[in-house]
Length: 195
Image (cartoon, rainbow, N blue to C red; front, side, top):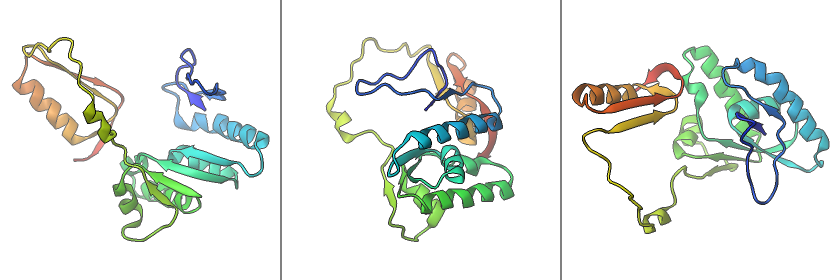
């Protein structure tokens, strides 16, 4: 797979992953296409004929399915293409996304809302919904609190792309009404099109 930081390789007790390439932060997206296609070629050339591939995200699945006719399972955990401003481009990616879903052995959604967004009430037999939630058994664990936070000076951090106005509204109210506290953003800003 691809890693963002080659100095910190993935660690797993059962196997050692093979890093096929490195995706550098700040690189334009189209610069990733050729290395990804080369990686798919290497993987498919060395795999057995009846291998099934697990494709995570539309960008990977789209490139893989455009260049291979191999069996795959598709995992969609984000509808990133819905944030594109151009309706024409957004609809183009939606058509590709539905094609990837319909041609998969199985598609995994992390939300039933994804299913409804793509297909409404239409029934497909190759869809599994595995909710992106914590297991309820987490309630059985006692929280470990080493020290209570100082309520006179809070620091709140938001990690990720600020795609929604609600995040900016919350942070604006927070820093306006509570100037003694801090609000930090970690991530890339994107155009806000959702509430």
